[in-house]
Length: 426
Image (cartoon, rainbow, N blue to C red):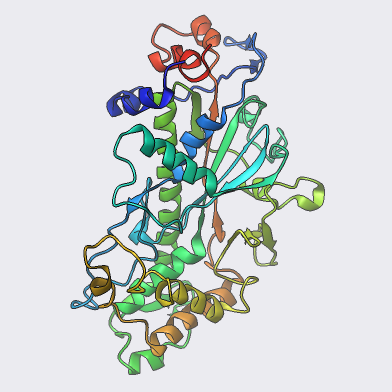
């Protein structure tokens, strides 16, 4: 068997981009009828630990130090205070907020990997040499937590899965990856940016301020002529979360081409079923905690206890307490802007030392808006789920026989043709 990581590192980016296709049919699968009917002559073949680790590394891996947001007009003589993390990741996040993590499942169980608070060792973690790749993969494995010994119990029937996915999604041998993001932290980070620049947050649905903000206008913290609709801010948070998860997924899909694995990025699986909303009906999912409210059509996932929790109740008594925890992440000992904590600059302490922690007025204003949203809507953010799960990547070992039977030459890449030899020595 030749070194698969060596082949992977030399694969051209443009070949991955232009060779990307949704190749769904894996070993052990069957299309029962129709013009493309085919039954695989092979048993399902799960991804190896190395194959899984490579895909996790390109989706969630630490790539070095983030440069953050270098300047903000609200504090022109200081470094900007907007970022929540200076951990550089393989996929970008808005403003360096860095909320995403990854759920995944295969024949061996269910897992979560969370590298968002990992501390980089180098300015650039990957320099294109073998030891770098192996070290990044090892770090990825170190941040993985196993949640159960069984594959995700997602029924292959509606409403848990859309009909076009029933024959292939989460089947034996496949690995299903699910990028998630924390919209509560995303929303608080956006609010700090808005409030620090003097914006009065307006509940445009009710045509009123998002809480009693007049004291903060009188104090000069907010500018009564600068008004930002709450609906726009919440939409921005959701769009950013969805984009971040999609970036992670697309990294993985491009790497599928370079590795010679089949698979795709797709939608059409019930995120509530996956996270655990139907646990009372025997479908455990990933065991996330949900909140219920008569004002909502669907329950709200708020996190996985002790592992990945939103900055909102029930993990905190109220949003004021959640805001205090959020600010501590940025300014407490070891936090984002602690001058004694590492960072990307030559003079870390002098750069971070310019950032002034939030004042009591600022903290109170942020808490007022956040608590208003929570009380008005019963959740935070108020217009969509706290934990965001917008799409999925499935990886399989491709059944070349299906494509040779039904498709013209060129249906798969050279990497697919030689995958078994390069990655499995067969």
